[in-house]
Each structure stands twice: as structure tokens, then as C-alpha cells.
Length: 134
Image 1: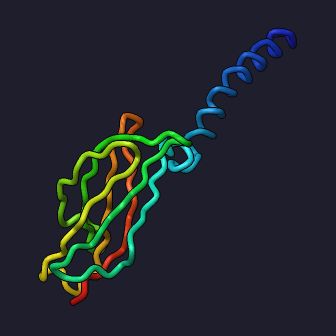
Image 2: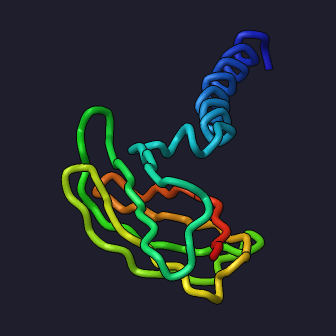
Image 3: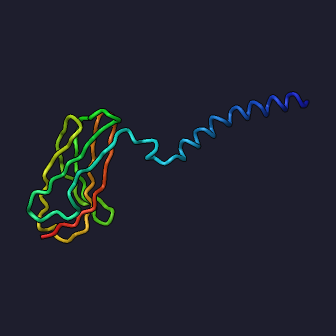
């Protein structure tokens, strides 16, 4: 094999490796950087809902300046594991509103409320730590 064929072989291999390196770089990016298709902004008064009383939950759902429509479901996590999934509602014009009522069985339990929002741009969620009180 002469030196010119070796150079051609090396050049071809080098060209083939660049797409592979680009793919590795994309896969190494944090998933949040790749996913963030829309933004969730919670407006929740506190982290301590009162047992058997309305606890308002408001979430703004936007993509840039566009107000989105979609649906919501709730997941409750205890120690990082989902222990309950509850149906939410649909929303329009970028604002989701609901009043939650925590039962007495949740009193004092350190839970995470996960609000899962689905729009035509995909699914995002936000986590809100709660401990119900009297």
C-alpha cells in the first residue's frame, strides 16, 4: 500500500468519525436542554395545604409568548415513588386552574405533587413538595 492510498483511507475514516462525534455530543447533553418544549410556571400559595380545605393550584403554560392549551394529570410521590395518579382537567389560553382537597390520610406525610402537563408540543412536569396540615 502506498502513502497516497493510506492518506485516502485516513481521510475517509476521519470524515466518518465526525457524525459519530456529533451524535455522542448530542446524547451527552442534559435531557432538559433537549426537551424544554414549553414552560410551566406554578402559582401555588404554599407547601402546606390544610386537610379538607380548598388549596388552589394555578399553572401558566407557555411556549415563548404563546399561551398553550392541553391537559393535566397529577401524580403523588412518596419517597420518590409514585403512590397515586389522579385525573386533572383540560385547560385553554395558557392557564390551568384547580382546587385540590387533601384527605385526612395525607396529614403530616411528606409528599411530592407532580403536575404532568400535556400539550401538542409534548409533555412536561413540575414537582411541588407538600405536607398536609390541620
